[in-house]
Length: 104
Image (cartoon, rainbow, N blue to C red; front, top):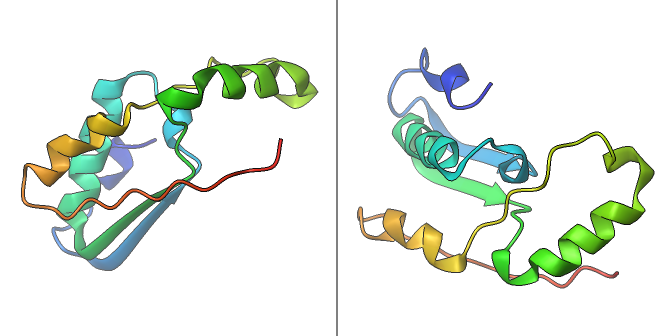
């Protein structure tokens, strides 16, 4: 499981690392932070993190999750403030956030 699964991977092993629809399932923001740092370590060029639940839309996310039967046994989705990602920008990484509208 992330981030431990990356511990055996050498630095700059991959040109691009893609992580899709995972961050809402982390146990804590600390686990997410450790995972991003590990991804940055093993990527030569880019880390693409997609489908992240934004704190701004927590009420919509929680409402949608409650209506889906397959989510009833999942832990509560973790959300992230847009500013949470600034800590990586401060480390010299280019952080680009794109919001997309998903039909309700």
